[in-house]
Length: 143
Image 1 (cartoon, rainbow, N blue to C red):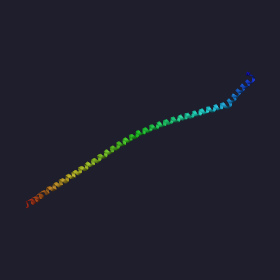
Image 2 (image 1 turned 90 degrees about the horizontal axis):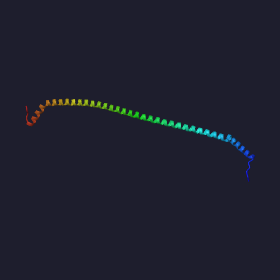
Image 3 (image 1 turned 180 degrees about the vertical axis):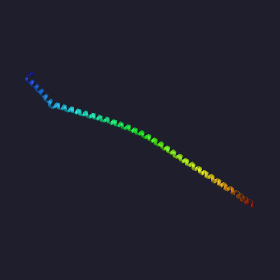
């Protein structure tokens, strides 16, 4: 059996071409259009995500920088406060030492005065005491 092409072959070819054109207009173009729009939308989302990621990285970097600066400032302020406290402590200690020295000098002067007074008082009474002691030792009055 031999196949002999006739006019129906051309009719089938024309039918196929018309079907391709109709399918292209009705199905393929809208589907391609939807796919292109979806691709653009996904690309837009990816760009948005990348922009947000970049912003987040920049914000994090700024945050880390500010935290570092705050730490440095805090350590500097702490150092200055410690230094001020040490200066105040030294001033107070010096003031207390000066007051203690003045009190000590006053006490020493009072003790010296009391000792002198006692010495003078005892010096005046020495003769009376020595006479009394001699009288007791000798058993008689000494003139």
